Length: 376
View 1 (cartoon, helix red, strand yellow):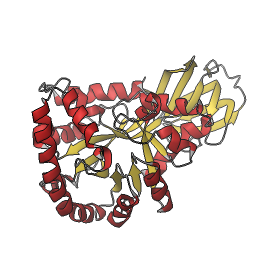
View 2 (view 1 turned 90 degrees about the vertical axis):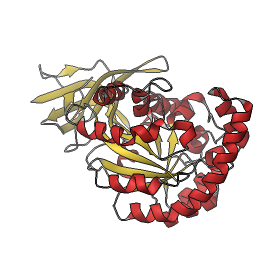
View 3 (view 1 turned 180 degrees about the vertical axis):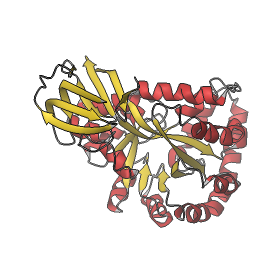
């Protein structure tokens, strides 16, 4: 089967060009500038055609399993498929579903209950998914039993990425403890409960991280899984990431940490919601500032799938060129994850494609293709 898309603005890594794209048997067969006159060609009306978006970290899967506090959706596959629908509607064709391994029991105990349920739902739903789903294990070092949770999962076929996370109060994302207290108060906890929980998290977190970091890093290094550090704040965190074998620093919280990561040869991932909102919800550095300094290598949707395309385009309003901004959500994350078969408009690569246009400053997803098949 052949699909010809013409009268489109093709988004390459280094330029935008009017042109025509031909798809055969799930692959990009030909890319050419100019307009096709063939009767079978589909007129795209001047819309942009870019590679399908690649999302290395989204927490959105969990929201479909737990749509309200203490409400667990009874059909895991239905929850996974609803997440997949949201994913492709956002223009994302390759997604790394971030699933929590461990955490603070009193904070989100449901994550432990759903851990293997969510992993199995992603794997068992793979034939039904429209996007290409991978597993990203969010390994919470503050949990004393995190190794017991992670080790049995290392043989899973779709496990491709793992991140080392430390949410101890007083460090990284929660280095300003008052931000954590405000967050906990906002989800309905009393002042006394907040103080008690912060103290418990601090004591338990410090002890567990000291025990878990080197052991978990050694366990993951032997698997060949791409490894990331999380919420690096100071150069010492980056040094720890290097020692652990990480190649990615995701969501650095300061300019200092991002500079240290680049100096150490680590690539960086920033949160797209941070870009769309204009800054961090927890007091971290604004990703637009990292982009302006040349310290941002990719965006991830974090907790809002639609933010991936919105965030890339928002950076163009900050002075970044459209090809460079779109590469943050296509070619560059593909390289970071070792996915050499996608992320660029080149003959021979997977025909994972996004057609979109702008309505004012708002991107409108018109069509999405995965391996040449229209999925949205």
